[in-house]
Length: 146
Image (cartoon, rainbow, N blue to C red):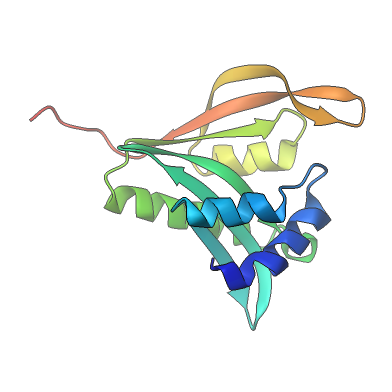
């Protein structure tokens, strides 16, 4: 993702997220050196992901797939790219938070190797007040002590 992609990414975000990131959130992520990727085909933005790297781990901050492209493997490819990048950077694990009611995303994350490790009560706003966040992690490597 580059700054030139932000308008298209923002439009996709607004079309699929009930409480979308702002233009500033995406620009700040790019300026901070977060790992921001887009999945495009024939000039059409199909999805994107934003990871915040740490020393030996990362957090998936945001991922979205255009409605017409969902269930076509776009999200799975974005997660696979993260795993490859994580292996190259020797990350031990990747974390994420997902709305407890987002069963399709939870299923995708589980199939990609993520497991539930915690719960953040009333973390996300929704139309009825608040919703819990499930905290998930995916181990990428086993670090040796030598």
